[in-house]
Length: 479
Ligand SMILES: Nc1ncnc2c1ncn2[C@@H]1O[C@H](COP(=O)(O)OP(=O)(O)OP(=O)(O)O)[C@@H](O)[C@H]1O
Image 1: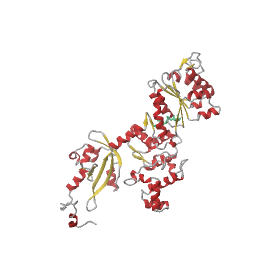
Image 2: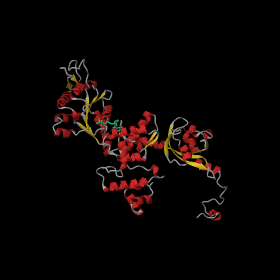
Image 3: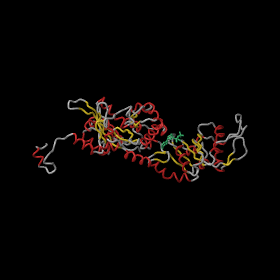
Image 4: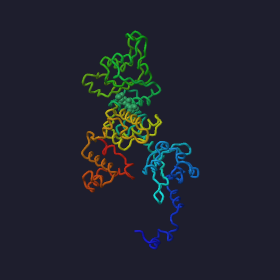
């Protein structure tokens, strides 16, 4: 209970003289002392107040900002199309911590997070709006630093298996050894091959890729080794093959498991003797190329089944690298999504913020049989349907929208994992209100509290409601 003025004045912490009642000047001093930018607008969006932090973040002095339309001062990516203050003034709904970018006085882009509210007079009439904004430059710089740690050339990953790969890649690249990359389709075998080439002593030479699975045998042979005029009916003139085009560089033989038995013999000879003959020619050509082969099939298995030559397998299996499927490195999903969102924003001159909470949940749940290529395509698809703001489930390809219908725990999840996931989802649905969540789950509040602690979900409680809640990609990273 607040004390009477007399009682209060006896406290050593409170001035005996409470002074004049709070005035506009007080409010101004308080607002100028905080680190977040604050400004207010009248109903015509003209700035009526601009605190010191707003001056610092925008680089615009208050005297220049006052009286001007806020869009002129901030030049944010959302000003024209999705003004948050306009949304608040029209709907009465506050916007909380929305990430946007503004241009400061030096025309440099500054990432900020904004929150808005209505301003009303004593009679309850709307007289304008207030926006607070936080400079995210340091947060962004940090985010980039972290990203750098998780990037190797064009390969992004924070998965431990990939991080280990990053540490040995420079040595592998520097050696001249033949490399075999195994991994499901779309896991990044070609990106990895390109990265090895760009780190190698052959980096200035060409990188030539051939998809051995895409061509019939005879065509592939001529594609690889070239031909001389008259070698076959359509061979009107001499034509160089990919081995010749890759001279001094790297030849990437994708889907090598699909090569016919006859061609396997020819490849073995090039690998052993470093010479080959173009089709129809008896003249040998030297092959100064480094071979990187890749396969989404298990070559060892093919050898066992007699479908792939053992001697060729040993020739190409000097250094074997394996790329795990995306379903085994789910921690990479948000990283890859951000990467592709940034890329498509740049390419298409858009300002999509990223995946909404619900869309990210779908991404974290889906099994991604097409791996990173499928994920990239899903983001590209969303860019067609999403004009601005956040990518929502309805912007995703149809097969992903169905993921929403029900959560199927990935293989290998324990009952504990599933319970953690179920509790987290219920908390999300109920905006982290424990009473409502406990009711939905049919358990009492104390049981819920204990389970939250046991599963470590307390560390995910968002500071200001559900908006900023981090999404655990799986309550327990997928085994
Ligand atoms: N770790 C990664 N970081 C960023 N982008 C990646 C990564 N891995 C793959 N990609 C992207 O995913 C797409 C597919 O990669 P890539 O073609 O290298 O896969 P692949 O395993 O060679 O596929 P396939 O077996 O079907 O030939 C490419 O656009 C590539 O840029």
